[in-house]
Length: 180
Image (spheres, helix red, strand yellow):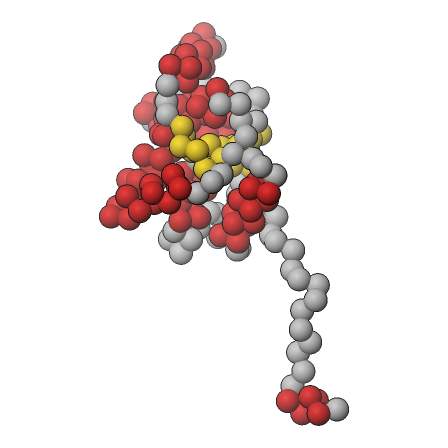
């Protein structure tokens, strides 16, 4: 099982508006939507479920505006997606993360983000963790930091492979050569 955060879902649902940036160059990731589509296709073929934590869903719905209800229906109806609530198990996990950070002397755990953002990121990661996800797909630095601290792998859109091109592409012949 894997998890997607809002950066991945928004790049999928609004590819013209939510293009992830390459972590090194800062440029838009080329073919981001194709990469995400191919990832979902691959995960679906492998029988993997894709967890969407409800805090990430709320971020999606805020940015979606009027399209929010349609996006929600779509995410709830597509087979590999599972919208997962912040429940008691996730609350215990967030409490453990926060207690550890406080014990180490920094409740934000080195993050420069607002306290609200840190708590949100912890909720996203906690849901993924208690659901048994080993990988989170995210372009969010805060989610990356919390995930890695908690033993999870984070994969950015720029790191996703593109689908292979069909090796049997038609030959491009101009009209003069067609009669040969």
